[in-house]
Length: 298
Image 1 (spheres, rainbow, N blue to C red):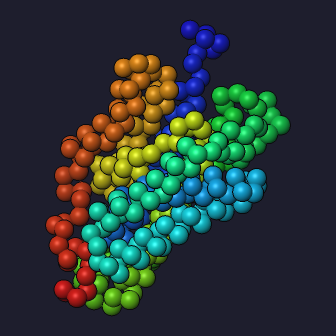
Image 2 (image 1 turned 120 degrees about the horizontal axis):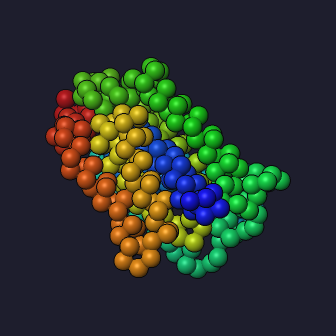
Image 3 (image 1 turned 90 degrees about the vertical axis):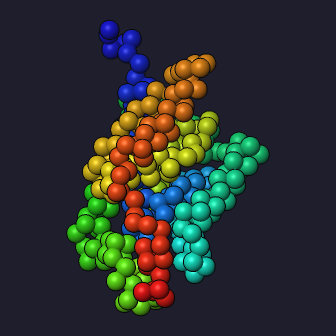
């Protein structure tokens, strides 16, 4: 096999898919440690995609589109976490239900109009004027989001594991006694945790929109959550587990017929296997009021 005959598409797509899932794992860990549900990261991702698409559609400025993507994700996190906590709703069902709102909106939007962000050439958000323009490598080498994501992942782990706020956030999710500090402080810490989790999704949203302009991916937040659970809420194990679904997603566009359908479903099957074989004792304790840190029952 020569370099000319090598299929570069999957080779370039794999690191993009991997780093995108890793960012979603970081967000899911923050949501779960805020004693909400990591399922909420799916809604954050779709809300960020919606903001990116609408921001660029209305202004044609990629910087404004990025700001809109961040803003939509933060609004979803703030509104969603506040509703779940104030209404004392089940965090899993509530997070899933809220995630359907941006999912349906984004689906309808892509059906109604051809979005500029997904079709414009040269692609917005990439560096230009290099020898990689127009090649498979441009989505990887020329993407500031890809290289920034490596720093953002390190920052996410550092904040959670090495700062007083991160340790306090883990304490609220793991030790019900921390809720005795008062319901106001509990709610503030948990909402802030969900908001921080939303910050990691915009780079993932930007990378995925560019990698899949003809078919916006949905359900990746669930795959990332399965990786986080399988990795027992550790950043490094979760990142390593993301490699399996990412590889299958990189191969997906190159399957035809039944093989293509199987490759499309395979990442979700791998996520299910993670939950079956690796999730033992990785989930929170029993779904009791105490585990949800309801100060009124302590």
